Length: 166
Image (cartoon, rainbow, N blue to C red; front, side, top):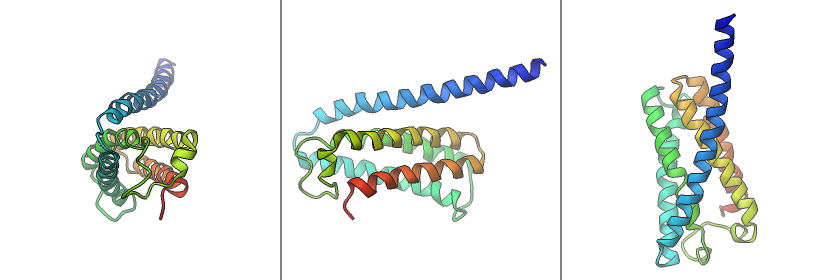
């Protein structure tokens, strides 16, 4: 009986932790985003910043995807390390979508600035999925990683479909 109650309590605590972690990640994105916005002297600097942050994030996510798809050997430590980098990088690019960054060397669609609420929603969803990805990679279970990679990739695609030029 006590073992059953203990397992239930751990499951509740794990669920609460995951929700709390998602809120922390979203809050960090807002705080870091507003700080990053102020640091750009020119719109071109912001564009370069966000492109580089997205590139680094994509490189590490690709390593996770390769493991999840069986294209690379699964290594739990490598997966956890790459997921941590993805999670760290995931909060960076969004502040660099400020005013004036819709022109220049960018694939960003005008919809980002026309539909700020929609863009924020897909970004918030992405940050939640990345948080889940980091948690899943930390379990050391390939099946957990596969599910989280799939959900995170779908989140990326949703944003690209609506807000990124081909």
